[in-house]
Amino acid sequence: MEIHGHWFATGSAARYDAVLAVDADGCSIHVDGTVVASGSLSDLRISDRVGNIPRHLYWPDAGKFETLHNDAIDQALRSNKPTRSFNAVLWRLESSWGVAVASLLLVAAALFAGYKWGIPAAADRVAMSLPAPVTETISDGALATLDQWIFEESEISKQQQSSIRDRFTELTRPFSDSGVNYRLHFRRMNINGEPVPNAMALPNGEIIVTDAFVELADDPLEISAVLLHEMGHVEERHGLRQVVRASAVSVIAGMTLGNMSGISDLVSGVPVFLVQSSYSREHETSADSFAFSHMMKAGIDPIHFANIISKLGGLGEDAEPTRESYLSSHPSTANRARKAAEMSREFNR
Image (cartoon, rainbow, N blue to C red; front, side, top):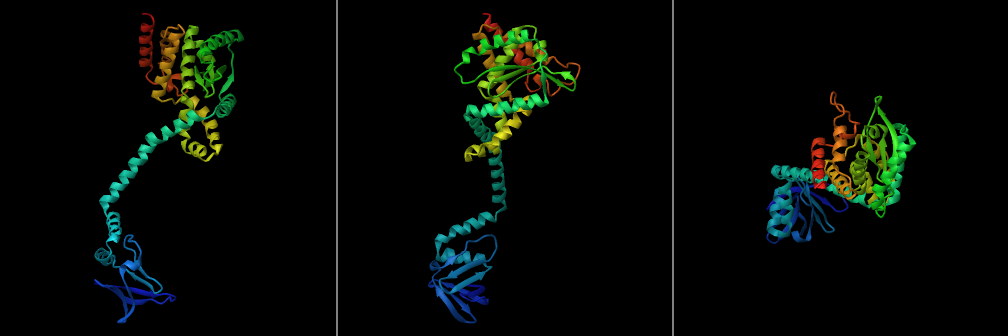
């Protein structure tokens, strides 16, 4: 077999037209009919095939041979050095459009799986492992931001606030060993000049209820029902998990590298999350179940939950519901009220 190319002698920049002769006894380089190097293919260092770029065969202390005849080199290697055939297989794979398309689809599937399941799973683990001082920092920063930009001082009477706090204290008593320091805040919240009924929980256990929400409730137990629902979000760290998912790259990288600067993303992300209330359906269902279970333990009929969310869900029947309303992100209001009614029937048996 003769393969044409160029010879570069060691220590020289000159390029010579050359022929690589390969036979059963070995190989040799011929320049103008003169053998300038010879040996066995097994003694040479041969570059791998990458597309159709030139291949190089290096002779120890002699020089290198360069050629564009990759197929001929592959044939010589298969005949004289079987261990090199794997490179030829790789090249054939690289050159196949079918393999290229399949690889792209595989990469796309892997990226989708990572986004759909991998990042949420990793984010949830990070959220569940954040220590109490971190959640305090996140919550304090979030409440300060909300007070500056969204909330106003409550106009609910001190007496009514005290009465609601007393009931809230009784609700939180069974969770005294949970490590969460529950606190209740009252705020006034207006969007576009309209009072907004809302209740929201910060990751450290601080729960905020708005004046419009308190005024909407016809029974104090309706407020208790929603407070238990918000406590369910705290106990399961739903809000923190959602925000960590949204800031997954910076937060997970920071946790991995020991650099907690990514926590600033959480501090800024929590207020946005709370105002837009973007809990997943799974988290809402979980918080509802938490509320039903503890209402029944506390002797509170779950019908109160059905009553209050029905009122909230009935807001704006004559207009499009605002994104800021409490139930804008609490999906399937009718189904949730129906479930609460079912739990009420079980409670009253």
